[in-house]
Length: 409
Image (cartoon, rainbow, N blue to C red; front, side):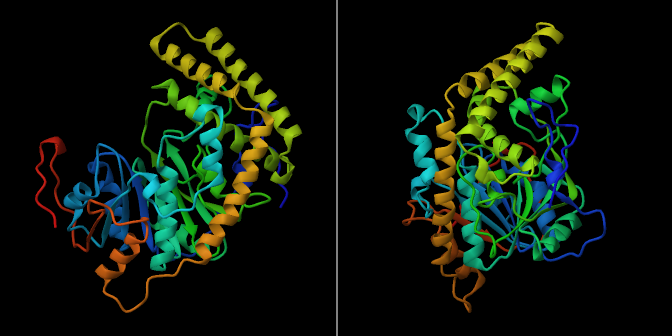
């Protein structure tokens, strides 16, 4: 399918890739959502909306918990009586997860003194969800971030219905823009900037698609690609993103830069109706040059148009962090990463091929317990799973810091 470049494209930056999506304005059929998956590090109170949506759709809600502000036990305590089913799992150190050893992760660990390593478990959680779906026979999985609000739950049913034909169906993100730090700066400095669909609100078909989420920023864009280009992808419905401060710390911009460069560089080719197999060293040499000029242009615009304020200073520090990290990215690193990514795609496909589903005929509790136990390489010292089948959403304390957790067995 040929695509037409939009006016959002400039000589230095493509501000939109939405022309690559198949927008469905006509009514579409619906299908059952097999499960909603929420990777979370936030206080369990942030999960209330997801619990309500899962209750309305009558589907299981999988909560993948980690970090200091949440746990499977705490999330289960808040919502243990909620309809229809809560599967809350503590996600431990990634070395304990039953996932393949990805070449992309090993490459980043040994490059530039490990500066490109991502200090987040979002990708691992999403891969665990794909693994759990295979074990439990879920075909239509919805990924939902804990800072996303669904306007109409039926939008998720429509997205699930599209999975009979498409590999994934995204929901348009409204509210606060869902962009990288650099793209946020571009918008605020007067540039044309749109948002693409992503893992924050996306339905995926789990049996035909063998994509995985690499441990890098824009991991969801990589999931949507196959060896040549974009998978069959549609968009329907709308969600709202909660606001956040993209310039709160320069480390965010620094950590995003490699993933932003790789994804934007590949989608640059797709925008020009070219396969991503043309992403050779010459392409990356050209694209990295454009990226440097783009970041320099953003810094120049910022200094020329905005007075010296704390907000301006934080944006400048973030852009400088991106610019500094860009200096560590060479064309050969981009090529090597994509080669490792392709090898990982094949590795993931082999891994799934040998994954046997949980046998039928067991109780629901036993089935879920066995499936979750296979997410880890060995039994964990602490109970990782809290599973309940409830009936209604309980009232939760207004101040969770003062709440006392009852004993759980």
